[in-house]
Image (cartoon, rainbow, N blue to C red):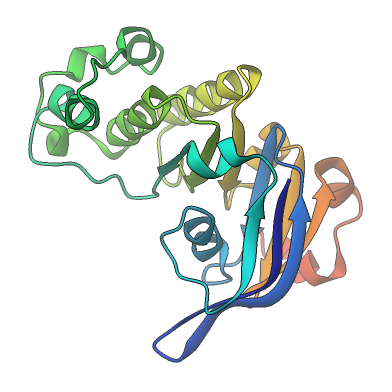
Length: 222
């Protein structure tokens, strides 16, 4: 479980999320949905410790979820080095030997390992970013729009890797604008509107009886 109590995040005098209470099971895949600017990304960043709470608290029932996290951003970030060097660096810092041959093959990035990371397409970069996250053997994987504007091949590879991670016991929290993706992947849905979270809702129930707060947004074809 993740439990948020009376949380609020503010920046430059503006409230990004809060105040609200929220508790949800992290088993499987939790989808975070809502309009642009509704607070989805801020909530993910807060869970990961990248945003500071002005009030309230967030607690992870399982300490492994708090300590064993990996984050995949919507826009990949790499050093101006090869793909291989970008994958190796976090492990070199820790004095460890990276193991990624199988993951790289599954994500179809092996042919790119010695290419400059910044020269890859956006889909290829995001597959590298997810590979790097999975190499960390996370207990909780946070994904912020991981397939936004990507081609079908990259979307399929990323979604397959996410499902495989869940089968191996990884908890996933996924922000997405793709309702098809939410239907395909998620076990529960949390809907954000004006910085406030609503839910969680069972995914099938969410689409069968969309909460009133989300109906207008759903009808916009998001």
